Image (cartoon, rainbow, N blue to C red):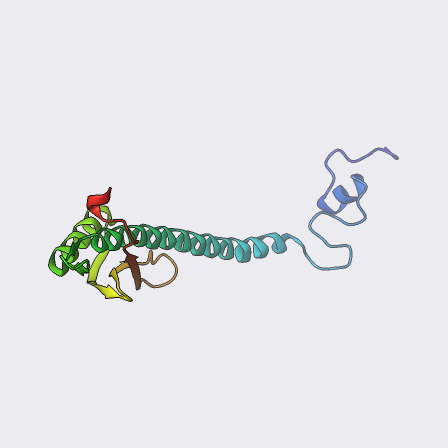
Length: 165
């Protein structure tokens, strides 16, 4: 039977039957293309996973730091409001009570894993001020875990004490 098309073409004939200039799996310029997809997949997937882990590490660490900073700021401002007014009009920081108030507010609002380091309440530039230092641990998914220090400063605004509110 001359002129009959083969019912089951061989691999080299398939490319020619479908109108391709080269058989499947062979680059017209020469060389195999079947391994290129596997090699590309083997390179791209690990890079993508590392990139995603880096983003998750950054996001979780940033959220932890922001929560710890918010709690430290709240504690520092609460501690700065604990003052005593002297008969001569001077404002004096009630140091033990101010530190206890700042630590109490921080401990109630701090996220899990946050640690309070120092609370210093005193007059700075004739204004009651509390400085609160805390730390929180980074996520540690991609970058090794480390402690991040956070410091918040709360100052008493003139005319704003607990009795005025």
